[in-house]
Length: 185
Picture 1: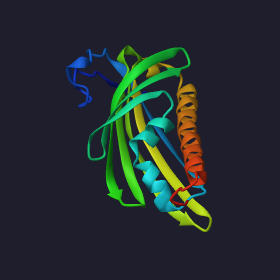
Picture 2: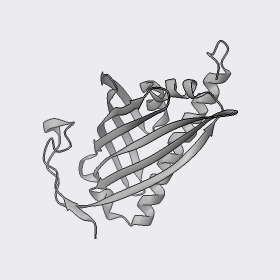
Picture 3: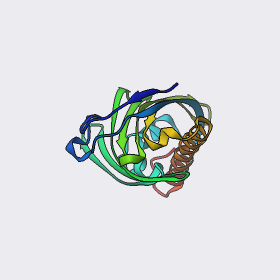
Picture 4: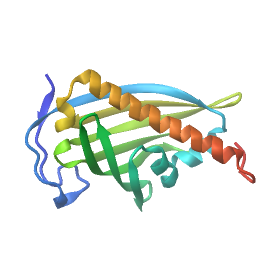
């Protein structure tokens, strides 16, 4: 049985008094890992992984992303998960940084009664003969209405969001690498 949580205003530590109290909802934990081969050097990929505009363009439904400090951002998203549609406000922060090789991106966000999400993604870059292998591990928790739908449905939606992120990210890498005067992939 999933854990149960109640969130107080400011309970996520990022959005302060703008968040109304949550009723008690089950929390679902999600874990995914995978890798992608990118036709660009680790340095080229790294520069895009730390660029807030590239991150914004890569996250489905992300309407804005603003830098609030070194490696810290606030974001606004509009998403639909099957029958549940919501606007989410959240925070992203980069940590455990080893330049040009790895980092952890922590995220937390809340979408009113639709629910909340929080977690982290560990990203590691490994050079390959014709590009870079990007490896990732995602651990997340969701709650609210989002957590009430069946686990297989939640897993499918989460997997699709992850795949969508990396498809968009790959497209940006390919486009920028092919642009005249690009710093070379």
